[in-house]
Length: 434
Figure 1 (cartoon, rainbow, N blue to C red):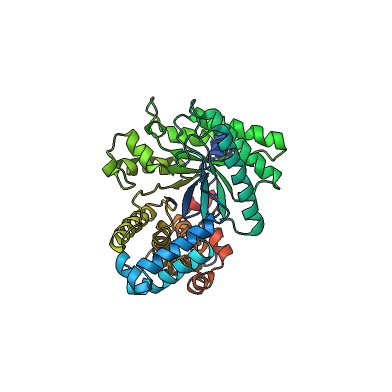
Figure 2: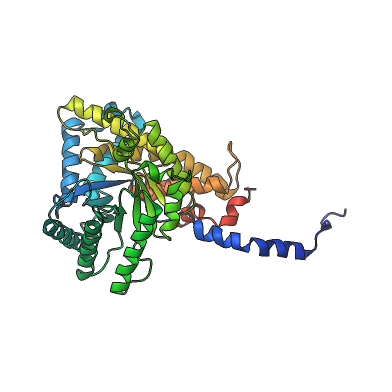
């Protein structure tokens, strides 16, 4: 063949064959787009803090930050002491410690849930009405004056018969209060606990539809998290994965699946001493949740530990090591969010998260740079890997573990570039990198 001459390509199938196949798969294409839209690309908080409805106050967020800083001052007053407790390397000690302190001063809580369920318990109706109305006022004021967490909302009582009406009323009082105070904040998050049947999720959808209609809101404005706290939410009576059906029952409103460590463990008969987020029963449940949620845009959150870092320094250090280890374990398993139940958990939450991103970001940035520039290296990455690498860097940036300047210096990429790799078109993931 003469150099520069294009080689002739022969085919055997008529164009109509491809057209017929495409037509036959059109319903599947539409179903894929509807059921698996991909990650929403928004920030996911690294934790959710639960505060009982009667305890929540205007200064709760700042108070938690101050108490966490006080715990550091008392039990790990410098980088070397915290590194010794948690086993941080010399290279990580100072960057992690300084960022933890800065985070506690600037944004101690990323996601706060005012609890009207287990953490609040049964109360007289008038008392819960008043607490829900007060919560709405305080949340609205926090967003107005700039003291709010990025995400805030309530956990209502569940859809089971004994508490259903009370849960619906509390949600109504809270949302109505927000509307009266100026409207729903962008960071609003609602949590539906103890979901057992998909029909309970459907009921929540109908409830939110009715509220949107009553206030002339855009359909779909209100979303919610589903808490997985019962065995039936993982495996239904007919042997199907009920959690997958719950996501579909939410009709696009589900934003997260949150694992409830202690309710779920108790449901399976795990004795109290062994109820923990690293129990095999917990691993199984979260693995099913993770697979069910993959590609749907619904995020998965780990649960909590009930071992509190209180008392003398040696007890605090033991609790910190446990919490740090559980958080690092969850991050390695792609559970990027968890629950924190005490201000003393906040330092080790951020220490674990920051160490996770800082110890790997240089390699991730270098790999992504080679992929973006099509240069060689010792690893051959594909679009799906580029998506994971960019997602890792973006999560590190969102929480404060990384700075955009250092990521840009190592990768040569802007945040917009990272977001482009993190949210590729569906077809891009099926094509191998050249």
